[in-house]
Length: 117
Length: 476
Image 1: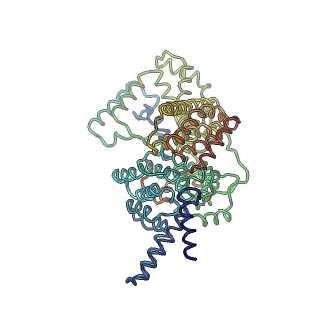
Image 2: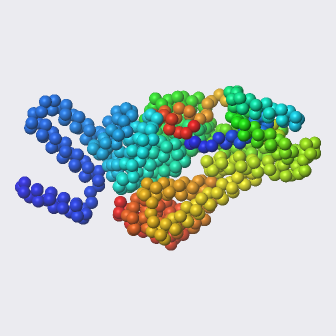
Image 3: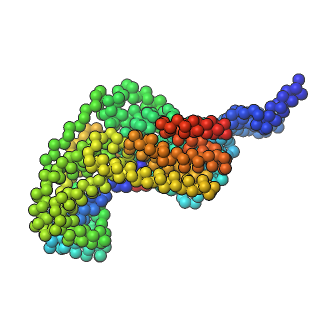
């Protein structure tokens, strides 16, 4: 089934978008935001994506501006700090058996590209 | 003697056309096929045509095994129009009651092998719009076209309707197409619990979904999981062995457990660890108990953080208090979990419910009831106005209502009586309008059967619905 990415909003946490630590000072926050806006304005390829503890995500100038606005508000900043402090998903113990999704399932029916990614 | 036989046959055909003798369509089609084969064979023999034997073999195969030709040659060669016309000309027995819809099914299956163009999808949609009657094959055809348009939600709901449909309205081979799509849909995201439910339940036993359910049981460590010596024959008897073999190997690598071993409650001491566990549970997505434990672990970490949050707020010059931040955090947690539960209500059923989970369930239940009420209002208004949509659109509208109601029942079976009271009058009246006013017997029959299944507590309603179901059976 093609459900929306349940972790998408979490990956859009302002600290992840700006790639800064949760104890960053307001000056560091503004500097990170302006740097990213500058890179996005000149079409930098690397600025369009970022890594989070929940996997990679993409950003644009609008998302960077939203992140900056969120972190200027003390209440919102504290809330986002709580959500941003997360142990990476890859930190779990490796499982011996692979019980995850069956990525080749579609080919069992002989179909290709039928489900939206 | 010949004259007497001729008179008997003429009387039989006359009564057949008049409607006083009912012969199953499949028998009639077999008789017609035999006649065509007899006439053409006789013609080939009488005219001593060159390559007569070859022509006879080709005719024999086309008349008696068109499904094999379609499945093994036309569909893999990605020829949707040829597939459609092959069905229309050769009358495969599995779709003989709904030839046009059957043609669209095989056309769509051929399109699914390659990137489907909008033009080809539109062509098939036009063929389906004019199809009459519309029963199970039309629902599966509409589902396949929705899947080709990448409208997975509609496809899922249409296939769910087809999977639970009365066997009078759908052939086994067509039901298998719907069920197989649902199994793949669940397996591709690792929702093995749904694969198990599809294989175990349902109105019809189908080899591949059954085999997949057994494999899924083993993958999930289900205490009922079969051992290797039981799994192998099941796998070998099912179709698609080459495609399924890697999954079987994955399943066989999982040891069999004869009792359910509950995962220990995570004893995480900090919020970041608990959030990491929650992210993994959400990403894993199909284990309701693990998700509930992860939510509980996060929730338990929040209140002890009240002082630290207060200090942090003061340092940043915030005006609100820690209580407001914690409340906002919990609200976000609910918003994170609610869509997962809506996607797979069984997640909530299998779990021990914490207050966060209860609130997420309440939110989903409210949305689903709202959706049902809106759809019932539409049915009520259209019954009053006597307005009906195109039959394909009506099946799609019914699939959406049916899907929301099923989601609600999966989430909380105790609401069955309330759900029935909400939908009974509008759906029953609308179905009666479709049956009497529009002669859409199959659609009305599916609605009556569904209502009857859920009319447990209302004896009067059961009686009325049972009569309506019988009327539908007589009309099919």
